[in-house]
Image (cartoon, rainbow, N blue to C red; front, side, top):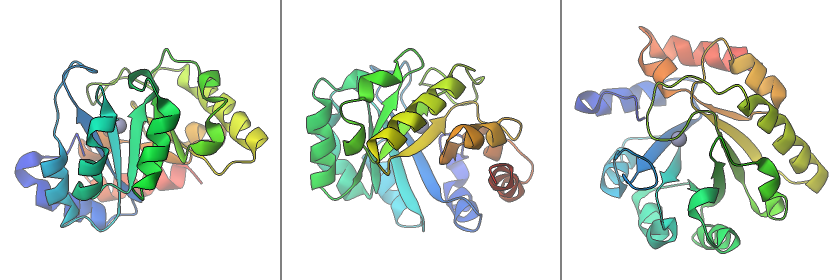
Length: 210
Ligand code: ZN
């Protein structure tokens, strides 16, 4: 939703409600972990009143553990923290789940996937950043493709149900390859909202993944 039109946010939420999209992906930025500030729990709580799908909240913030309860209250169904912002990752995962949400971990482009080896079975969602977090509309970093394959084999080896989500630079051109590599969820804000027919673009993204 970072690429949505905030002057017409209700219209854009309705568009997603009526599309084949599965989740709302909400990027929260603090101007410290990433060089940008987006929106926080009060906006998410307002969106929740209208949104009819899973609220997938991606926290690009330092000390995320301070706000888990507030994001739960705002309506988050999935709460993802960054590996790089979590000194006590295992504790954060347990705390998110104890509040009744699915727990995700995101990796910046430079962070190797093997760092998740000892916690992979505790993670509901691994979010691979395929751009440097902070802004929408960036170009896909090709290295992310191999990271998806590696995480996928870690998940399979652990016998876990962990989902893989890819965020950044997802287009109609690379969607098929991402899903073939093992991605379960694609975040494609710019591709969807900059297209003339977002509902049709979402439909095409879903087809590309089949
Ligand atoms: Zn995101």
